[in-house]
Image (cartoon, rainbow over all chains, first blue to last red):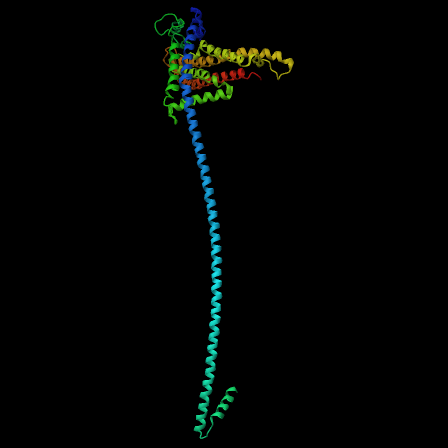
Amino acid sequence: MATDTHAAEAVSAPGMPQLDFTNWGNQIFWLLVTLVVIYFVLSRIALPRIAAVLAERQGTITNDIAAAEELKAKAVEAEEAYNKALTDARAEAQRIVAETKAEIQADLDAATAKADAEISAKAAESQKVISDIRAGAVDSIKEVAADTAKDIVAALGGKADAKSVKAAVEARMKG
Amino acid sequence: MASEAHGADEGGLVFHPMDQFELKSVFGDGPIGMFTISNATIWMALAIICVVIMMVLGSSRRAIVPGRAQSIAELAYGFIYKMVEDVAGKDAVKFFPYIMTLFMFIVFANFLGLIPMAFTTTAHFAVTVVLALLVFLTVTAVGFIKNGTKFLALFWVSSAPLALRPVLAVIEIISYFVRPVSHSIRLAGNVMAGHAVIKVFAAFAAALVVKEIPTAVGAIVTPLSILGITALYALEVLVAFIQAYVFAILTCVYLRDALHPSH
């Protein structure tokens, strides 16, 4: 850049345009204008607008989160209520089952007892009938045996009186 | 500038890395007075238009679910807002529009300056010195208004041994007054250096078509220069953003010192 400095010396102009102080007034004036314009554009229009949008978005997000939290709490509450209802229902069912079981047991016991009593009554009756029949049968046998014996004795040419034949049959049957 | 003619009659490569920073009157050839519409005026106006497009038109739909343009505007808003809040503190939020203004202007001036043939306003000390001085004066005024004479505690390091404190106070005061200098030169210097170096590479890129240079040399120098321009341009894109960010974050740091001067 020797040419530059050489040239600068030759025309006595500064090598750096930045150091040409005659231009500073112009630049400073327009810079201040620029800064003031940008400042007002930003602080009056752009920044409040962006801040409002960001705040609105933040608000929306916060609201949504709060709503979600509320719904979550509600869901938890509903689940608790559901669980409680379920437990209650289960206990109630168990109670009813136990009650019913006891009732049925009682009914069953009563019926069994009644049936037992009936059965034993019937059995006793039958026993009596059977023993009656048995007694009747022995008598019939005795009669038939006596008759048969009398007939046999008569057939053999003997003569037997009924009384002795009966006694003999009875003696035999005992033996 | 006279150097143009001077360089041309050298016959070889033409280096004018600083010509791009020259201020010119847009209408007519007259001298540049304070209110002349210069190329600086035009590129500052373009920066305003870009800020309006990005921040005002971008957010004009006010959508709860943002579109692309609105997302960019919101991103810029959130980026600077968070920076102010984190670095300068919650009570500095009322200076957010001010810092946003500085950041938006610098970032757009830097990026517009990267357009070929553009005039880079932030490469000028006139601009960056005013920006830095505005910050310096604001911060100093805020410091005294908020804290009164307690603001001077910033220079009185109470955690240091008593004997050292006057020495440290001198150093602190010097560093405080150096702030606007470094603040302004950092920005203009970075931007100017990048642009100037790109221009130098651009001059070398002409090596192939300059008669005085052998074609064999030109065939090597020209592609290398173009590669260099490309790489530097990528770096400059990065620098354009980083310098705007650095300027804004330093403003926040200074503001924090003013609001909470105790070490």
